[in-house]
Length: 322
Image 1 (spheres, rainbow, N blue to C red):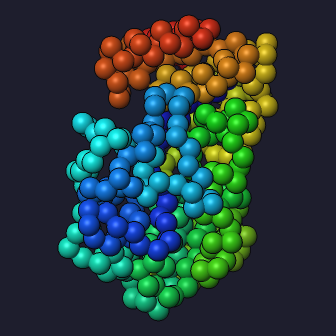
Image 2: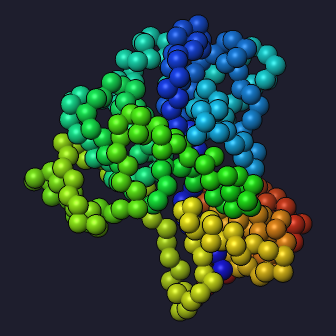
Image 3: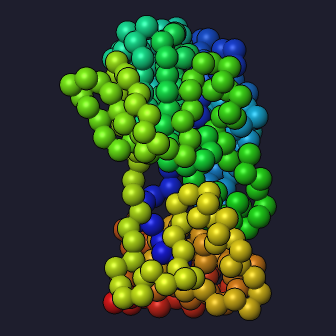
């Protein structure tokens, strides 16, 4: 059984600290998460790759720096033809200021250059903050504490390519470990913060170490909901949020295995598609009257239901596990 965590996939990419390029006729640095540029040159146009629906993903290689300059893996561009000169409606425009100044203002507005920064959390926000602080000129100590054993990585592929065994673990990393080391960022992986003494500005880790800080950033992200039903602690029940979760679930995906997925949202349907492709017998239980009820129209939900049923996935709506 697989429990679908109730959190939407995070769309966005890490920063790129390669040299500036031009967009819209001015020099800019590569954008932060969610930023879009106004471009009127051929190389500023959409490359035509985006999120093609449940189970599909344009997968840039963030760890190696091979990813699009627009900084987002989903481009909701309307009226844009990849073969013509077109202008992006920018969320954040970089026309009137130098990129370095913008980055410094965004990342360094709350911290003095020499202050120490303690980041609790190992997700996308934590990784982006590290990059933005260093790009913005912050030279003080930075420590990142995460309860996972891997540097910050993308989570969306955990239910798709990575779960299917089609994507290497290193390709998920937003930055390789060498990136943090070369920029004097200390990674405390596999550790949890137990208590924070705000008065003395110290944090106690689960291994007994204490870390001092000048600035504390909590970037822990969401917590998945556990199945609240008798027998929820039995063997064979999986949750999907982390790399370790995906590795354990991957072992269950084999021809003839029977898998029940609780939840018909993005992740539940993506896992269902991946498991069915691996030859497993899959059933999805959704408490609402249609799948994707929180984010999709009835027409889209019906289309997705039909698509999965064509692949052999049984979908039952209005069903709860008690």
